[in-house]
Structure formats: structure tokens, C-alpha cells
Length: 241
Ligand SMILES: Nc1ncnc2c1ncn2[C@@H]1O[C@H](COP(=O)(O)OP(=O)(O)OP(=O)(O)O)[C@@H](O)[C@H]1O
Image 1 (cartoon, helix red, strand yellow):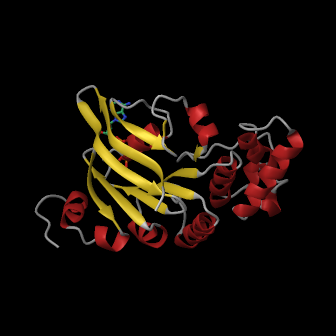
Image 2 (image 1 turned 60 degrees about the horizontal axis):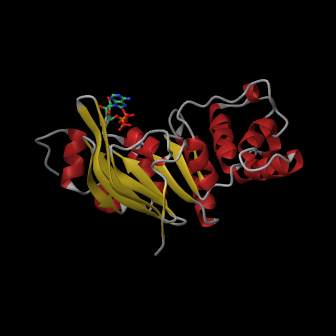
């Protein structure tokens, strides 16, 4: 199976703390992988290293075999990696469609082309019917979908999603899970940071677990939730399954 992204011995130290410590994993093309772990485990730092927002202290990130850990975020985006942020901030003086077009301007200056791509991205997340709406009229789930459409407009091969389900009701989260499955069926590779285990079980084919910056487990969701080291990391020392 082809690995689209390979993270090799990735390490990031801050003063007095190693936030990501010698972590290695790979992402298979067209699969959904979840990065999980208790608070402070190093998930966001790992994410930022892959997205080019942080430089590693050591280790490598290879995307389609090309080293990207020294590339700036805009170059990483042009290589085919897009991300969403946990806090959604649409531009409120622009329509939904215009917001989604912003992503397309990373690869084209042609407004018609950008509009077409943005509309397609909105269709992919089920938001095309609200293309002309103002963003302040959107519900939270719709704002999350717009964030995803913006990322899709950059034409990514890999989509990084940071807690995209946070704050959503179970029925709303189920809608997002459906969108993610459709995108993966279309060939998109997805890496998501997610706290809610039930969602991880539904959406991911592989789970990577971090604890105190180190990878403590990797495997299918059903394997990972039964792993004693994972249970202990979430529930504290002394827990026995
Ligand atoms: N810029 C920074 N400077 C110093 N320490 C940092 C910095 N960024 C993160 N850390 C520390 O690195 C560790 C890992 O943080 P990180 O945000 O990656 O964890 P996380 O798994 O995403 O946590 P959460 O689930 O709470 O968002 C934490 O102890 C955090 O305080």
C-alpha cells in the first residue's frame, strides 16, 4: 500500500519539555487516520509540524517522498496538504461561496476557475445550497463545513482536520462523519485530531495514540481501545482493563 505521508522520528522540544518525542507513523492514501491522546499529549504540535507551521527539532516529514519539514506553510499547501483550525473564523463580510474561493486562490488567479472549484467544494460538504448566504447566518456545523470547503478548494491530497466535531451534537457529528467517508472514498487522505472516541471508532481506519509526546499505540480503532497502555494513559495509572 502507498504511504502518502511518512513521519519519521519526529521530535519537537520547547523550553523544558519535549512535546513530540521520536514519533513515526505513515498515512495510507485514501484512508482516514485519527491522532488521539489525552490533553497535552502532543497532537496539535504534531499537526503543526506536518502542516509546516512549526519546525521539528529532529526527524522528517515526507510527503510523496519529498521532505517538507523545512518548507513554509504556503509551500506545504501548494504541495497538496490543507488544514482546518479548531476555531472557525469565516470572513463575515463575504458570502459562503466567496469564503470558499479563498482556498482556490492558492493555485489560481482566475476568478471563474476559483468560483467553480469553490462551488464544487461546497457541494462536497453539502453546503452548495447556501453558497450565496452570509457567513453570519450559518449554524456552527455549517461554519465547520465551510472551513472544510475552504481547505478543499486548495485541491489537497491530504486534509488535516483539527477537532472538526468539537461542539457538535451527535446528529450533527454524524453528518460530518458521512462527509469524511465520502471524501475518503473519492481518494482524499485525511488525518484528524479528535477527542470523542465514539467518533474515532466510526470514522478512522487507523488510530495513532500519543501520550507525553511519544507514540504509545497504533492500529485499528478496535485494537487501540483495547490496548492496556492506551486505557491507562486516558484513565490514569493503576487502571486495569
Ligand atoms: N509553543 C509552545 N511552547 C511551550 N510549550 C508548548 C508550546 N506548544 C505546546 N506546548 C506544550 O507541549 C505539550 C503538548 O501540547 P499540544 O498542544 O501539542 O498537546 P495536545 O495533545 O494537542 O493537547 P490538547 O488535547 O489539550 O489540545 C503541552 O505540554 C503544551 O503545554
